[in-house]
Each structure stands twice: as C-alpha cells, then as structure tokens.
Amino acid sequence: MSQNTPKRSKLSLVFSVIKQSLQGKEVDYTVGSIRLSVLLLAIPMMLEMMMESVFALVDLYFVGHLENSSFAVQTVGLTESVLTIIYSLAIGISMAATAVVARRIGEKDPVAAAKAGMQAILIAFAITVVISGFGVYYGTEILLLMGASPEAAAHGTPFIQIMMGGSISIMLLFLINGIFRGAGNAAVAMKSLWLANLSNIILCPIFINGFGPIPAFGLTGAAIATTIGRSIGVLYQLYHLFNGRNVLKITIAYLKPSFKQIKAIVSIASPAVLQFVIASCSWIFLAQLVATTGGDVASAGYQTAMRLMMFFLLPAWGLSNAAATLVGQNLGAKQVDRAEEAVLKTAKYNVIYMGSVMLISLLGAEILVGFFSNDSDVQNIAVEAVRIIALGYVFYGIGMVMINAFNGAGDTKTPTWVNLFGFWFFQIPLAYLLAKYFKMGPTGVFIAIPVAETTITMVSFFLFKKGRWKRIEV
Image (tube, rainbow, N blue to C red; front, side, top):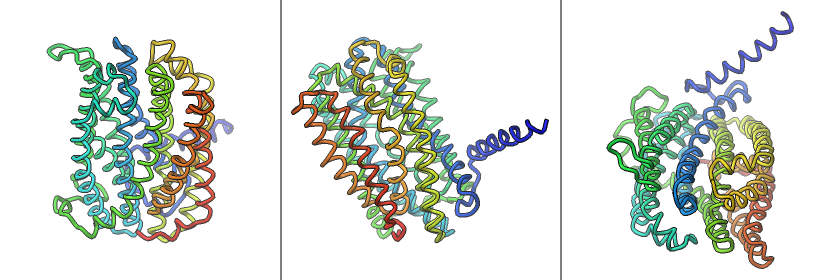
C-alpha cells in the first residue's frame, strides 16, 4: 500500500497539471515553479500546433486517394509552400503581438496589452487583403513558377485560388492565438484550432466526394473545407476576444488606429516577418529544386515528407512558444534570471520530444508515408526524405526554443540575421551544389536540410548565451 501511494500521487499530480493547463484559468507566470509554468503553457500550445499541422495532413490524406493523385498531392504541397509566406507574415506579426502583450501583462497593464493586440489585427488585415487578391489573380502562374507541369497547374488552379483568397482566416487564426498566448491564455488558442480542425475533418470528405445536395468538388473541395474550417476557428476566437471574461478586456474602440502603437508593433514585427519570409523562401526554393531535378513524382514525394515533418515539428514549435510567453512576461516583471531558466527548461523538454519523434521517423517511415500515398514511386522518395531530414530533429527542437526566446524578448533582429545567413547563404547554396553540381538530385536537397538546421541551432544557442536579448525594451 505504501509503495503504491507515491505512484498514485505522482499520477494524480500529472492529471491535475494537464487539467489545469486545459482549463485556461489565469495564472501569474512571473512567480512560482518554472517547471509548472512551462508545462501549463506548453501542453495547450503543443496541442494547438498539432491541430494546425493536421490541416495539411487531412487535405493530403483525402486528395492522395483521388484520381490523378500525383497532381493533387503536388498541388497541395506546392500551395502549402506558397502559403508559408502567409504563415511567415502571420507568425511574424503574432510574434510581435505576443512579445508586446506579454511584456504589458508582466508589467500588470492589461489595458495596454489589449490595445496592442487590436492594433496588430489592423496591420494584419491590411496586408492580407493585398496578398489574397494577388494569389487569386495569379494562381496558375504561381504553380507554374513553383515547378508544376502545365497539366498539374491547370488541375490545381481552383485549389490555390481558394486557399489564397481565404488566407485572411490563416492570418487571424495565428495572430489572435498569438495575442492569447502573450496574455498567458493558451487554452483558448488551443480550443480554436481544435474546433477549426474538427470542422475541416468533417467537411473535407463532404466537399471532396460529395454528400446529398452537395456535389463532389474533388481537389477543390479540400480548399473549400479547409477555408471554412479555419473561418469557424476565427469566429470562436473573436467571441472569446470580445466577451470580456478574460484578462484582456477588448472593446471596439481599441480598433481605432493608433499610429504610435502601430509603428512600435511594426518595428518589432518587421524583422520577425522577415526572419520567417527568409526561411519560407528557402523552403520554396528547395521545393522548386526538387521539382526541377526530380520531376512531378519526386516533388510529390518531397511534399509528402514535408507535410509529415511539419506534423511533428509544429507541436515542438508550440512547446517552444512557452518560452516566448515566459520570457516576455518575466522581463516585464524585471526577473531576467527566471526568464533565462525558463528557456533552458523548455529546450530540455523539446529535446525529449524531438528525440522521440526522430526514432519514430527513422523506424516507421514506410508506415507513415504509406498512409498518405498509394504511388510506390512517390513513397520511395518520401521515405528517403523523411529519414534524412529526421537526423536533425533534436537540433531543430533546440533551435525553435532559441528563436522563440529572442522573439518573446522583442529581439526579432537576431534570429533574422541568423536565418539570413543560415538559409540563404548556407542552406540554398549547399542544396544547389549537392543537387546539381554533384548530380545528387533530390537527395542532395534532403541532406542540406538537417546540415543547415543544425548549424543555425548552434549559432542561435551561442548568441542566446551572450545575452543581448535581456536588454531589449518594447
């Protein structure tokens, strides 16, 4: 009896922490156990990002079983590569919102935090309207530029037009969740993604295959379902943003443009957006390099591997988001040592997670890939890509935490420079050299990914220990 009691108490403690993290109650993250603070934020954040990764996988699963599945899978993958620009803008602006909101919450000024969040929404809306129009008008040309064959581009044009046209839902989903995370309410962010994904999972087979009076839209149906699903998630966010029951008390008056605050947010957001645009453009170049050196089949295999990679990496990104909130709030409360300790503890947990994911990817690549494609040639390429890319997963996990620590402190310039040199001056030339000069084709591209990511992580950790981020004012 006495031997079982400690086990029961530990188990009940674990369930108690999970329950508390999912309830979304207000917690002061500037005091108390750092481990508990990390877990309370990380659990819902990981679940949130896991749901974001499910969007692409659900689409990939359903379209992978259509006729002309090679074209369909390629279209989904290439469109997702283009949408990474939207993701970059959304993540960059949400990073700025998280940093400012977290700093104001740490300073015990929730009104200023709420006003900053609303100004970030105004900025995001103005930018996305322009990009959406461009994507709808030039949908076919974008697919061709990405390396799709004319037949594949014609097949996928409606898909990319709907996805780009509905990108405001992507932007708001990321941004508003960033506002909630900065305020320490990660549970609402998580629930909005769960609702959006549940809607997408239900709607995807209906719009792809048809149901009752709804005709079968095929590949285009996946775009319709995904856009509607994300929009439902945004409506849920807006309800909680304006209902007055959270630490952020939002009113319509806060949407009035404040150019001083907009300028302050843009000064933080611009490097943050740039750092993710730099990374996204690198991924786009790699996708195009695979398509031109390996053809449609290699492109489809690479896109399948990338979707699997994102499925595993986004929860790790969610866990690392805990570092951004804890750094922001503790710097606001003038507790610098606590902020640094929180980052290192978050990195430790991410290493454990990514190490497990690496083993799963290396040992179960065939099973994972087989779930998303029936084409044996596509499967062979995807399995090779999954295994090579997975070799750097532990370093990816550490690097994500370092980036989020810088961004959470408002030091968005440091990771921007790291990304510029790491991706554009190292990863892209290395991939091109291996793929073209050494005639390795897509395999050379796959090898360049873990090599570059590992280098970026080592540089980021060195700069983190130097400590410039501790002195940033926002």
